[in-house]
Amino acid sequence: MILYPRRGVAIPSAIKYRKLEETGFVASCPSIEVFQASRWLKIDYHYILFHSCHGKHMETETITAILERAHKRAEEMDLPYQGALLPAEALTLLQEAPAAKLVDVRSRAEWDWVGRIPGAVEIEWQSYPGMRSNPDFINYLSSQVDQESLVMFICRTGGRSHQAAATASELGYTNCYNVLEGFEGEKDATGHRGTKGGWKAAGLPWVQS
Image (cartoon, one colour):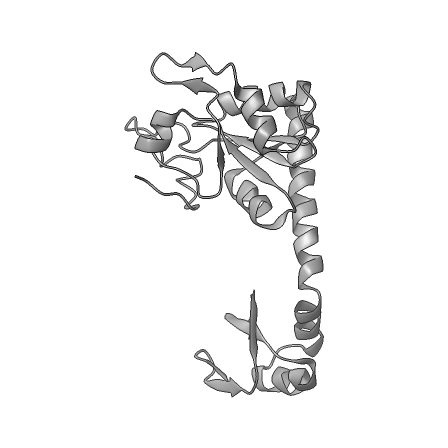
């Protein structure tokens, strides 16, 4: 049994699912109780039924919409790969799209000192100090990411990841995307990164040593 604080209504055998925007709680009910639940909560019966039965379809639509926006950006920016993503879009694809990979191409120093993204594949594009190009980048990539995978590249602000996505596309990766703004984003008015655009400023998952 789950108690909904907003209305103080308890519904037997309720099960959690996505948030219903109109009511402000997270739950649904088995179909046998759905009509009664709609009366108790004063929301539309068909709205509950649709969301409880078609959640997977809604996820697919979300992925499709994100990829369409990414492709449109690539066309507008004349990019040599499949698309350009915002950080939040990249996280959604990483969590929901089958076999999607996020490749963090920053330097080891940046991973250690600035922060890491949980679940990302870490392959340096350039090494610190000196920012020397990594001659084994593609070898490391091919050993960890299939060429048919949806692969998203991220760096500090989007420059190195753009180069990585372009290079991977040239060498046979057919589904490459760049994460715009990168991990830290551009500097703000005080000269600091991590507050103006980027993965960190968006409040997405990251960890620090």
